[in-house]
Image (cartoon, rainbow, N blue to C red; front, side, top):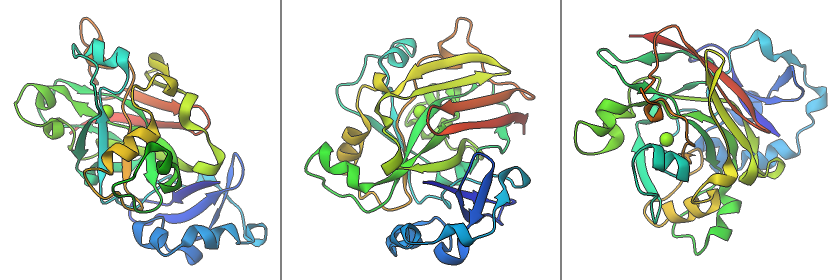
Length: 281
Ligand code: MG
């Protein structure tokens, strides 16, 4: 099943994607794809819903909003692909590096990425994103993580490297500018996707920059959820950006950062693609 939110900014409505080009609205049943509705058991309601009687709409007629409403937490795993750790000049970590990103960064997958004023080092990062389906706290093992996953979507963990790495302290400084987390195009529910060996890629103006597979993750998705649950309570609708593979702009010599006017396409096998325009603030 694919869960989406269709509509202009602030007017998105919960929908199910029913074919390559069509969706049906279900906001009258679910309200929105949010912590509140997920905790109220809306996925069970959806499973028994007869969607064949609902009118179909063309996806192309709508903007695709972020498929979860303003997640309360955006948790990120850093340096989680070995080759990316090497290109970053870092030693691959012995346990997951986790950091937070302001939830207000989340925008739709086709919305613009805004380069902040004065930025010279805005960079891209394709990531497979986990959407939490039910509360997880102090899990006993990675194997328990699976039942807490709603599904997977595509995330762009946009990053300003100067503020992230050269201004001391936490990475959050370079990660939380408005629009720095395009998300979409929809959530593929966990029952219909095995996330452990999927191609993921990112291109800038058609030039492939990142092209890897989730099988290269140092710490797999279940491990990351189990690990994070030892430090905080994961709640329905929270999202986890699980790390990016090699090929980010920072890794090139000379480095190649985003410029206004460029088009970034970000894709994951089995989920789809999102496409953002870079604009200057
Ligand atoms: Mg990242």
